Length: 470
Image (cartoon, rainbow, N blue to C red; front, side):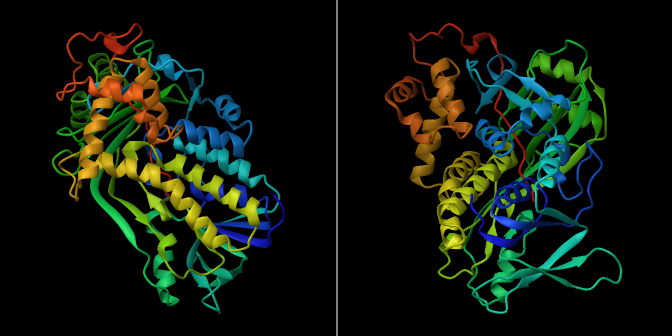
């Protein structure tokens, strides 16, 4: 990547901001990362990341992109204690109430807490030439003498008596999460309000780190997804420090997980396989129960604005945030960073804003549609369900049922969920035939039997990852 400009400013030092800074460091002489939080202690959650105490896992596509951006990062994480898992034998998958077959694969999953993962990425970014951090600062507005171009950002240090400062920049990237103020800043410059799409899901979740008894559970990840009539889910993920992170989640509408120890465990037992429930009951609690609420899926459609100032981009949850149950946030942030890199490689700063928003909208379409369709499959979530959504969810339910008996179908489904393959892969003739052979109640038609190596003697799960807030 060639040199594009002198100065870039990234607002927000979460995963999305760090990934954007990694890409920009190859194109700008100096990249300043503005972050309101002070640097956290190693291994401690950052205040501005409320999901930091909850279970996380990168999807396969996200892990792939992260390794491209930071070669050797996986080995660094393992050296720091991250858990290496073979998904084909050490993960349990459940979708819509269907226990998926074990899926033979040669790849590996590297499992770490959010603080360990984000901390490793932060140190990699900090070591890049030209990257500087401005901690303890709030971004309070854009600098735009001519509304057609942003030329910097105004910041305020979080100490008494501070005055506003201006940071000049050829490019400003907003990665400040759902609370991002870009939409309001643009309106103050005379731009039309950006269209938004929103699904009010009202998901609440609670988490606790635990230490399972030695040998109590062979699986390194057990995740149960929500489904129609049971808008609850759970994840039990092995991470560094000989710990597991247990997260339970449900819709606020009658399924909010309790934050008291006994209620928390009782809620878990409504979801977990019997052996998992026994292991968790016998586990040593390693911390308090942390609760959080996620109000809605939210997507800002900046690509639909007829006018947008040059010199300003948006990424991460500031652009599009997903229901964290579906494991998309950090992986989507990785995809957005890849889009930015390709846009800079293709034509540098020339017409960058228009090209980036158009390209990133295409990258977001698939995970957004998947999340929205999954949310709207639950009757408890308000929203319009057109014929396309109803047909899609009916078909996906049949594919999930087929994947509980056929490892080939399960493999294709897992690749689509992991954003390795497009959803069209589930329309191939072999998948269509298997889905059509499934009865409406979710069982295979008479005469079909599980293939060797299926999950007839296994339980669950679905891979998970919390959102890349900020």
